View 1: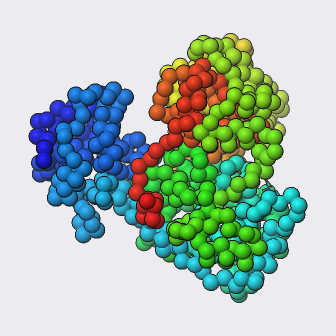
View 2 (view 1 turned 120 degrees about the vertical axis):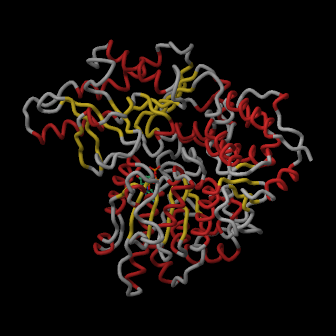
Length: 632
Ligand SMILES: Nc1ncnc2c1ncn2[C@@H]1O[C@H](COP(=O)(O)OP(=O)(O)OP(=O)(O)O)[C@@H](O)[C@H]1O
């Protein structure tokens, strides 16, 4: 078996850092283990590569994958045949790792820095998070004993059927499935009724508790970002008002949505939270929306803080981009959602509970987890002839046919290079509405009139948003923001294109607990009644005014990354795609960009072939979470 001497290893790591495949941090992981006695080059290289994988969103290193694709993993996009791994086999590598004192292969050595599970190598923390998430979910998969006749009666009341109700009624099915255990996922595209369904589910759970003579359930609603929480706040409140239940039950359903960070209670200068298994959350039901944005670490913290009796209900769109940090928890858990995958027992139970025939979604080899997942398949927002709906479905199927552009609600603008004025024209039209409003503050100094005007400016701003996959360069947020600000300035809509100016939209890039602002919150710079600049944010339906000097690390947001736009929707969304290939240009990114649009979507591109390639490219995230539930 060929090994890797320490001098060979150092040279290999240096070249990989130079090529951009590894970060300095990843090399430091190998150095740290070497300083603590690890002398096997294969173990040290694997440790550096596992650390690098984390930076790419993977929770572990798949050794077989690493052997096949070492050139790309180590040397980024500059594969070089002379720089491949020395010639060792998968079995050799596994043996070397399993014999190392740095590597745990079971739960006997939880203090070892690495964990090997089959062909997957984890940094210890990621292994622990994955174990915690799997155990927290497994523990909630047990079926509860529900009074079927009462359940059926309630479901029939909450989901009245008429000739327009799509069959089978997935909302009713999702509600039934979620009621019968401590864990459920309701996934679906935009406007498929996730919020409507979960509010009816909460009404059902409270009614069942009342019928059984139990106290009202303590329910909390949360979302990963402030922006997503604010949007959900509005839609939950509307859905609760429309709920066909008694006033008493309606009053027992909260409509306030908090962020996961606020729910868990952050501790200053720490990654840890006030709530954990030693000080669990005081709740019986936790609903988390936009669950596709939750990374593995956050999900582990949530499950750690959840009391064992509490239900967890995740809502989200499994086809959206995965979290920014490592993991693709919702995607992993929903891997079989499309097919249903229900057991004979689940199909029979659902037919009794809902009256729906599920035989088409039956599986001969059902997994326990899939009995807790329901996918809503009918969009009320993008029904019928909606171009946005057709476009989103086509992209989800890996295609981008030429006939999806109808110039009514979907439009493709072919750009001729990075200076094409079509972009400027689009942004001028998109942003001039709110900028005109910003230039006309109320004349009197009445605070209420000022607040009403500020609120109007904020909602007018959210009518249009330009998105891009990239951060840097002329096609990234940095270049685009500067270009758009200068163009708006030239047209007299901004007093300046630099520094602080009225009309500057800004994005929080971190959580600021003192100011009560969260990463992803968007504010608008306005002139206050005294003539000073102030940045206005809307948090929990309240306007917050902050002086620019208290916001040292916000960024301008005429253009926003698609990642940051998750959880938000805009009446008109425009997505600009760069002409050069990038690993960021994937199906999930296109789909997420398209589905941010409520009424109109414009795609700008200077390279049509690359668009088709992006639609065909799926994001792969290496993880062992699915396997914990029986994925092959
Ligand atoms: N069963 C239903 N009957 C009538 N209207 C419905 C039903 N389900 C959903 N709707 C309506 O469809 C629209 C979208 O529903 P909802 O907001 O629940 O979907 P969602 O999946 O949560 O959407 P989003 O993509 O915004 O997260 C809302 O206007 C809602 O009132």
